[in-house]
Length: 109
Image 1 (cartoon, helix red, strand yellow):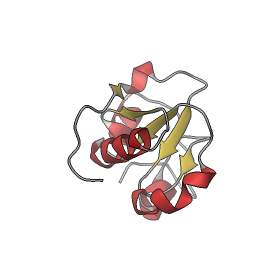
Image 2 (cartoon, rainbow, N blue to C red):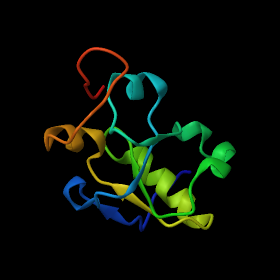
Image 3 (cartoon, rainbow, N blue to C red):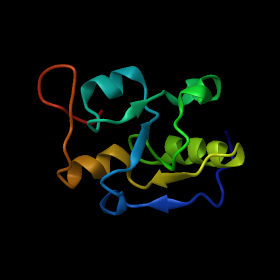
């Protein structure tokens, strides 16, 4: 999943309300704060967990957009319809979008 080129991207504000959001951050990042209803598969596990992905367009998100761009490129090359969320969860939080977490106040780490 190296060498990201020509990856489709949307801003947080352009994500449809009914979008399937795939969060590819690590477990500690997810636990600290994530979008409610998102599917969590860390980047390093995506290739081994493809069967868990729905047959629907995916909006891929990470902290800033780098990891999710690589995963988006990989998914599109393997038959999925995926788009990167530019700015990632950092933009999500900055735009005041809802967040959930394991305990305490959600944050992006």
